[in-house]
Image (cartoon, rainbow, N blue to C red; front, side, top):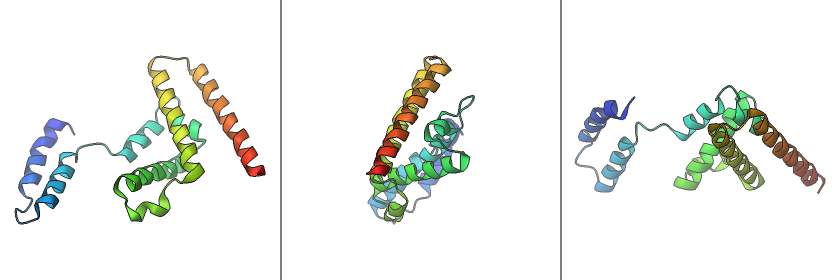
Length: 146
């Protein structure tokens, strides 16, 4: 829904917050309501992962749709844990090498999307992703031998 459509809903929700609750909690609720119309990180990443004609997210992360949902969940859980220190997310986050690799892949994903916007040839983008994926496979092979 548009921001204009959401505004009267936001106002109604804010107006029904009980005046008897603590000011800090009241402000926290108002802030959540203020951003209630925003698209979540999970939805944004899943939408980007399904961009056609080239599903870059799946190609970069070497995922099918089921694995894409799992990696998006881990990315969101990691962000939530690091932002809000949500202890429930602790066991579901990216850690150590997986966090580093995922961060590198997300940077590549963003770079590819930006290059696509400036109309870089798809073949060039595939070559970049393929070369970087091969380099990662090589690094993984070396790590597994250590």
